Image (cartoon, rainbow, N blue to C red):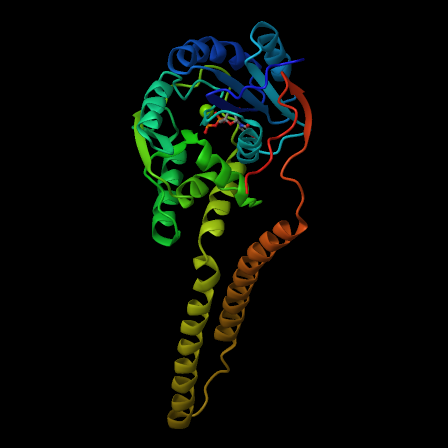
Amino acid sequence: MNEPRTDPEISVVVPIFREAESVGPLCRRLVPVLERVASSFEILFVDDGSTDDTLLAIRAENARDPRIKAVSFSRNFGKEIAIAAGLDHARGRAVVIMDADLQHPPETIEAFVAKWREGYVMVYGQRTDRAGESPVKRGFTQAFYRLFARFGETELPEGAGDFRLIDRKGVEVLRSLGERARFSKGLYAWIGFPSVGVPFVVEERQFGTTKWSFRKLFRFAFDGITSFSTVPLRVWTYLGGLISLLSIAAAIYFAVRTLLFGSDVPGYPSLIVSVTFFSGIQLMSLGMIGEYVGRIFAEVKRRPLYVVADTVGGSGEASPVAE
Ligand code: UDP
Ligand code: MG
């Protein structure tokens, strides 16, 4: 239990959710790479409330190699929050974030570290292809990036995901942000600092299946847009104005027609159409406002982002946030 309190040079944060089979193979491939590129390191799994033997598998690894540690959530909080917890508990002078499923090739970390030593604060993996993903998912991803590029207030580098290295400087800034609706891809870009991409090829998933349901992905994209853009809030004002103008024009047209030709059959169908049309618009705008109000609510509550239930290998307390 009495570990020497020297901080490792590099921490690798791995959010993990129900991937017991991945733990061993990941460590087998990751440790040699880290031994080659870093003077010292730790691998910090953030167990996102797995219900299988994930934590057990990590304990087994820790027994063999105390540099492998874990923080375990009391339930599933989602990958974004797991990454936030990883950044809180990692002690390295640089932190690498990667998936547990070996889709992020550990060997790429060598290039990350080289760029970091050149002085970059942020080194992100840039996927060169999206093979192995369903066309539907790819379509949605593309649509999302296009939307974000158009309306988001921050620029997202193409093909950059969570696989990246962040210098301690950047980590402290990220930790101090304290946003609840975490869209880390946006936050990474928002904090700035000298950044560079390193291309890598996403590998096939080795074990199990993706842990993202369509609902989770949609939620994620929605969080991204609403956290980094107020366009969804404002667009309704313009649309409302335009519709009002059109309805005034229509009113004038009907008045003139009645004056010239007299009134014909009372406009029952057009009445129904306009009523439903406007209630639709109102509902949509109410929903949008609800989104933002909900966000304010979540921020105001100041709940902790996550609850740690257990730790492996002394990553008990988070280091204090730098001012
Ligand atoms: N993950 C997590 N919590 C979740 C969902 C996923 O920590 O609620 C982890 C998962 O274990 C993996 C990483 O996030 O290490 C990426 O998940 P996955 O491979 O399922 O996503 P994909 O690669 O399909 O985007
Ligand atoms: Mg994956």
